[in-house]
Length: 308
Image (cartoon, rainbow, N blue to C red; front, side):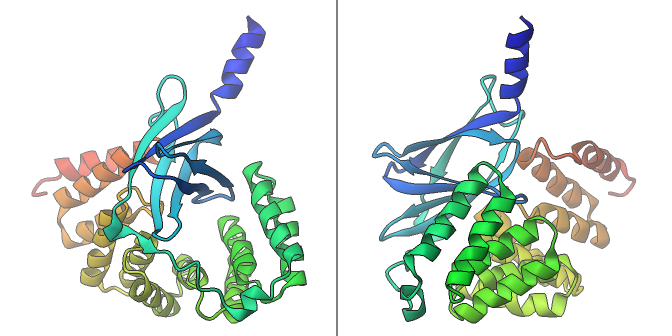
């Protein structure tokens, strides 16, 4: 009985993500840790169904790529409140063409064509190591990739993402800049640099990169959320509200938590009920967030405040 209980406790620490694409189609599906290094790939079959096993509690970005059409991203929360009694998180991903980033994978730069196969293998091996959350090994593979091919923009960006998620912001900035140096047309290091500068409070620099990102990909929830946070940091609340609301429209559960910044804006305006509504919406999207009890207390105070 003791062994069975121990096994149950071990299994309870991980979850299974089961999804289906609507309409059903074959696609490449990947799951990325939103706030900690993790990476896993799978395929959706003709019925549009896919699954990921042994997923730890947390917030993830689900990326669906359909060759010839484009890419759809969706934030998902994995935890006890979003899973059934068997630890399964069931979700449907609607392939809304209006929110899809067009497929530009057929456009390959000359510098990218020159990347040797050994460097590409190191890049793939880094992703495999992150599936088992071996961050040190993933970094080692990526470092070998950029040593072999300094023009490997995606590898520099991958290094930057890991550095950002492990709170090494100076390294993240350095790696994202190297990614842009390697490929000035790359999108990911632009939006990622915008995120670094928001995080460290360098809002003038953040504005340049996040505005660029929104202009290039207006349907990217991350770019819109970061531009909204940038305007908030600059004290331009009307513009902040515009882009944060757009981020929520594009991805209501986005891992950057645009609802929290919007709630702060509404509190500063004295619109306490709207602030409370935003915090309620946040808790619906992220029921297992560690700050949930504190947020519920704030909601109660806002709704109970005289003149709210």
